[in-house]
Amino acid sequence: MRQIGTDALVVLTTAPSEEVAVQLAEGMVKEGLAACVHILPQGRSFYLWEGVLNRDAEWTLILKTQRERYAQLEERLRTVHPYDTPEILALGVEKGSEKYLAWLTSTLEQPTWK
Image (cartoon, rainbow, N blue to C red):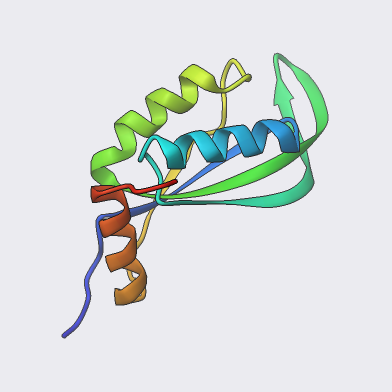
């Protein structure tokens, strides 16, 4: 059987510190908005903000969720994120491991963290 598309999304955001990244990750998983969040180690971002070139240390978060939860996830991130305009980018998952996608779905349907 050929798998064409999924309802899974990968959402990217950044954080100004590891502590903030961990808080965001834990919050999204505990609230059932993401099944998993992976934090990449400190990197360097170069971007223009209000006409000024910025060079900042940032941590990248990779959140795994589903399309139906995206609006809630985005709203929650915008509410708790320390940036005025946080990066929130959703990328559709075209294909994926059936077992992983089944886990993602079941985790988001019935979050059972302890």
